[in-house]
Amino acid sequence: MRTRREAIIGAAAFGAFAAGLAGAARAQARREPIRVGVPTSQTGAYAVLGEEVIRGVQFAVDEANAAGGIDGRQVEFRIGDEQSNPDAARRAAERLALGGHGLLIGAISSASGLAIAGQLERWNALYVSTVNKADRLTGEACGRRLFRANHSDAMDLMVVGPWLRGRPERKWGICAADYVWGRDSAAGFTRAAQDAGKEVALSVFPPLGTRDYAPYISQLKAAGLQGVWVVLSGGDAINFAKQARQFGLSAELTIVGHAYIVPTTLRAAGEDVVGSYGVINYDASLDTPQNRRFVEAWRRRFNQDPGEYEAETYTGMRLIFEGVRKAESTDPDKVARAMNGLEFESPFGMVRMRAEDHQLVMPNLMGRVVRDGGRVHRAIEMTLPAAEATPPPSAACRMG
Image 1 (cartoon, one colour):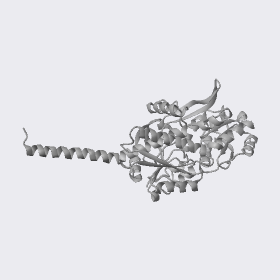
Image 2 (cartoon, helix red, strand yellow):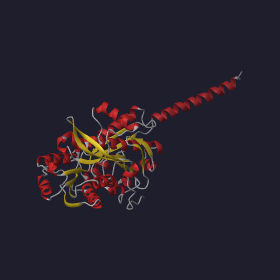
Image 3 (tube, rainbow, N blue to C red):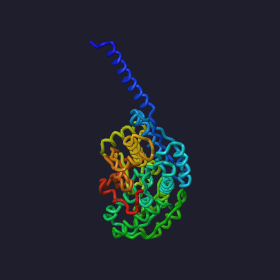
Image 4 (tube, rainbow, N blue to C red):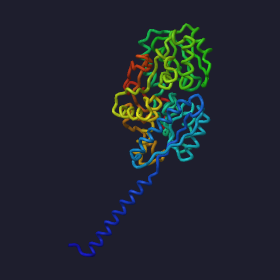
């Protein structure tokens, strides 16, 4: 039997232990939330794509919070309108970052991503690209706080090259948006075509937000081409697709698109892109454990399949969450360090954030839009596993 003194000491020890547990529980409950900033297009030529980014963010946030948060941290996000414009993107991202939402994600244009990238150290922020494709983000503009969780131009052309070599068309044209993504993609396609023994005879570069594509379509039709590489997205892709069919371009030539035959375009202009080919960065049919769960939950909520920008933005959010978990912190600098070499499960399967250039290594696809029993959808014709779909890091990247 314990003495009265021992009982008192034991009670005091137990009380201290219980108080410690209660204090730990209160500390856990008070853990700093994960604050994400979303500088994406709510207006401008890419507003429809901004809607997809926001859906991807919201879905990831709701999923995380419903499961109790990330290591006890609830997730919050705030949106800023980048207006499909790099200057507006920089201003929107700055307001978010300096307002406490320094884990940035989701700008649409590559020009916007590059405008944000140059300010991250000054803002004490990090940025995860989930749409920007320009190679320079993981090339000469790479940095320790800049990450890409989507496919780059170079990754997409890893699929296009083998596809081109098996095609009969020899004389090609290009119709690409007149800014950094369109110009980079056009240059990459030209190299891939030349490597495959093809000729690029004409390139036209409509401004972002073009509504009348008739002058460009007329040039393409008059050039004696057999195929056209189309680098347009959002409202631009929809307008081009409708007019290409109206003026007979898609009936006469093979249309191959870069971010062109995405669900956004199919929903708005499905019949107009039947027969078009394109790179498919993500498809709901991907057979991975997490993708099956992701698609099922997405369908229950939205009554449709997730598209490229939604799935890649969701993956980018998962990257941030895993970075916070590994860093045990929401500080952007610590989270950025934790992301180097990070591996995690995603709808694409197990993926790795390559430390050398901060490019997420993942598979890629090529396919065609078909009409099947009255339903317009994409048919996958080629799949490249991650190791084959991701070129080596650019020699231009000098990670600080």
